[in-house]
Length: 425
Image 1 (cartoon, helix red, strand yellow):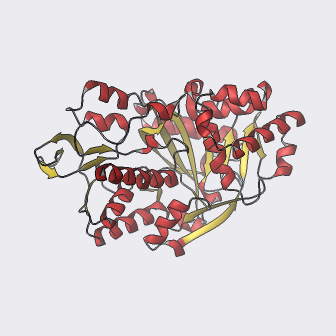
Image 2: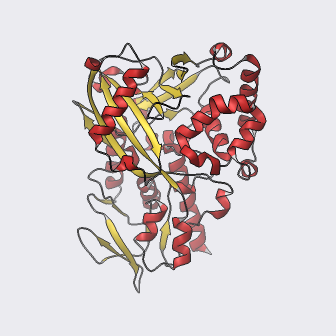
Image 3: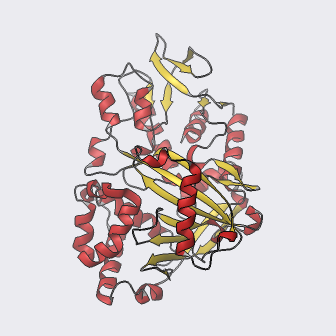
């Protein structure tokens, strides 16, 4: 988000400084070293329909590093693993009967054709899915998936959430439900972020790492920033790409009602354990879990997508869990989380032995995904604040999509145009 904003500002002849609290750029797309290789902290994939991401990667000179792969999808139900990668497998799927499969298929098809997503914002997701899929399919398929992603907050979530999810995944398929083509850049987001940062530096941007902004305040000319490392830095204009609550916490001059409106955006966080293995567990990039007992949301087998030479001929699994920011998982020792997650992984895949586990590592972010609650777009604060020249642009402003890199880039570019238009008035 921040780097995309910086790029477009530079292209409009602005002078730009990025303040990044971490020691590397990239935010949620940043990478780390695990075992003896470097890869993304959280799982990411690029769809052929992700034109914003693809255009940006082309602009920074990495288009030749794209790899496109036909992927498969699995489901874990009733203690068994099933493939759900084509229409035939869909009709063979044992956990639901033929009538229920028809209703499920109709639900997905209908959602893929709907254009007026704002109408869906007024309808609870449970009500809409039950209407189209029926109670049996909702309880057997949709409810476990919703709880895995949203917890009990699914009850407050609008049908626009499932619409956006189906729209994105439907776009990944070349011909209906027949084929998924997913992509990545050789070298992962580590390579993308380094190339992007260097591209910005070459265009004249300044990037200051390990620089957390702790306070913003107005001055006669613009905005004063106080950092953990230095104070009283002056800028004409400031954009925060932090989540909504931190964005207002650093701005104590904002009135209480405005702060409450931003603080009212409800986020979920993520706890994600990366597991490095000696062997694969399945041929599926994503395995959706429709049982309640595993402590994680799903199984993402990155080595079913990327070439194994990217990760030193090993296998990489992500085990994510989406939780409330107040969850005790954020206080739990990573080693305890990894023990629980790896044990459950071994339970799910009996052919996988403890000796096949090389290492594991856990990343935690308390505010990741803004919940698309009922009538969400009507309650969302704008980018302009009551502090002149202080703006908030973040992923909570994704109102007709799901949280992913492509949507993040789109929001950055659209909201920046909105900011420019506002200044011209």
